[in-house]
Image (cartoon, rainbow, N blue to C red; front, side):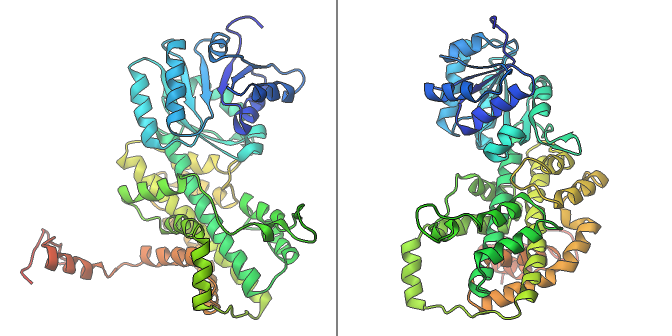
Length: 469
């Protein structure tokens, strides 16, 4: 093709970058990519659909030269210093009006710095969350762009074409000002951490409390995925139980995986930034903390030998399974409530103007936390755009009222059986605290005033008070 003929460029041709670029090409746009590893460029070209326009550039300079103005260049590289390194490499090659998109999981604070840095150079910069894994990137992810509105207008057509679709609606929308795109993706990942923790605890109750087989658990989760609990995470959980281990005989892979969970930091960022706002997200906090605790495998084994916990088998399997379903449903709603309340607070406090109705709408398809619940949330935010917490919506209130008794029962049974359900417990704790008109923190404020003269407010008159206790 002639010079300046490609519509979109990608830096970083790993699994996500390659698949997203192939998706772009499949939707009728000419796509060019660059990676320092030439074999990844070769794989890009060999994987392209026949009849599409896909090229691997031999250098960054060649790729930029072949892009149409204003150039649209996306990075899918590891968050951190590598992003800044790529930006510095791009600056001498770009012209005013060109667009750089960071599609990785960068911390929003870093994105804010990069926006300011590039503004003076008249280069547009967008932080953009992408969720859906490698299959989502290839066939339709949920895309969360934010920041530069002019850049959004320039790439909107491409992003709408490649995103997942729900009822013919693209799962992409402008997420708000500044670093809103990366902020929304960060909170998305925090919710993801929390829901995964809840599902793992339900699995533990089934496996150790009810002594269920992998086939039985598969059947239960597959059935759940056909109803109100339908979601991507429930769907893949059902599939996981059937996977045979190819390194041993007669074992399922899930049983051969060491109980140490990794993380890439986005869950931790969610917790940290929630505390800074401040807003309460205890189930996300617990999910992060328990992944950390899982890494202390040797200590846990030693503690188990010292305390010798004996798992008490549960009875009434059919009844408990229904309670697990309803309890997980309630806890999942509460997880979403925590994350969405954080976005509502950040929208105002950080002046991002995050449109929550669009956030939940584009999460309905393509992303890891997509679920049937998001249809309910979408209707709630369409009705009230200023909703500060989804637990204030009457439809959601009715759902939680019907299901939270089962959550309490599951927690009771698990605690009696010595099966840890810290995530489930944090969810019901949040619900009880959030719906309590009177909290005991008046005593805490009295303590603070006594030992540190931190003052307090009164229930019967305005003002700030201090007492010589």
